[in-house]
Image 1 (cartoon, rainbow, N blue to C red):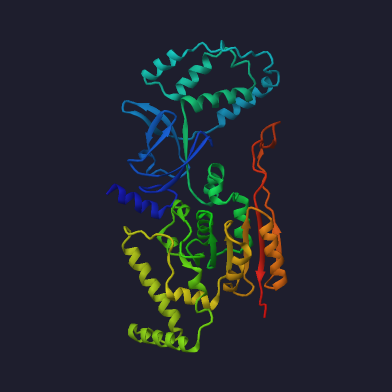
Image 2 (cartoon, one colour):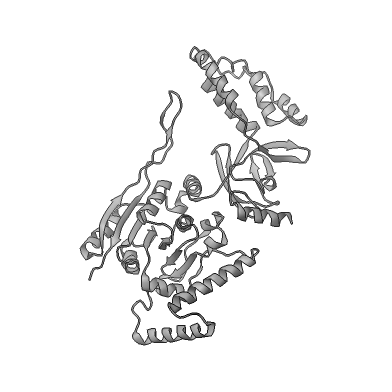
Length: 441
């Protein structure tokens, strides 16, 4: 009963976790990023301590936890944020004194700390919390008061990470997932940076009620980002060349609802291209079948085929709502009715992120599936494949408004008297070819 109530609460408020939710665990302010699925049996290892993720269930995303020691071993305790007014006042009062200090006279010879390792172990056996050990280390340091305010904060943070590690439970969405993969495993997402992903969605004009055709060979991050922006409206068609679908493992990290998962579909390119130009005999057979189905379901006259599709979708949605325990997996095969709608009307935009494919050959096959004046955006790690594709698009007059963009993102550290670009930052974010399909005659 408790698990069911948590699931109902998470459906009503998606910012609260429940049993089975995916989370991004940020250990010690970015030192380590871990994706996990919450359950009472799931654990995380921090240093030499293994803690259960059970206390995170039912907490809102953004909650901060700290490793504490208990009679049954280490566990995660939620840290409630307090007002920082007193801390700010303390900094303001000591700012004038801090200007008269410097670290030139401080000699690091390992004699400033009077608290030994045996004393710290004794404090742990007595049940002292991590914050108490940090405060004891500060009180027994003979050089702490002589340091500047900036050095004191660095010292406090270093000891806190060692003796009182903290875990921030972040919500997995497009930005956080892309940043985590770019930091840990950039090759799995094609070295796509967050600014490149944002520019792809913007140049492809992805918005509500759009039908977006996606070629995603970067683990599913692109498909998930498009579905997140659509928000349960429109459709995402993840197509693939050949018989084997591309991996979509990252989509399952997004915690999408069943409504959004039903909008993520898969279809091989052969199905999308087949019967693009149908014979009249085949179309008559389909019209006859649709009329028969209309008579059997006693639907009102008018736009028969469309009403049939919408009614069947509404019945499917209502049946799934009545059975919340049965979740919908993303990436189901597209139904024949939806395929026929895409073939007749075309897709509203196209996004390609396929570093392993020949860009020009893929565009030749995919561009005719778009409606006229529909935008497209193509990502590649290198410039030359996009330049070749752009030249051939200009020669064949298949698109207009062609341009190659190189996204650039620079992160700054903004602190008093210490504002500068971050020292360890990515200097390269790939290239994007964008344009608009036209009628080539």
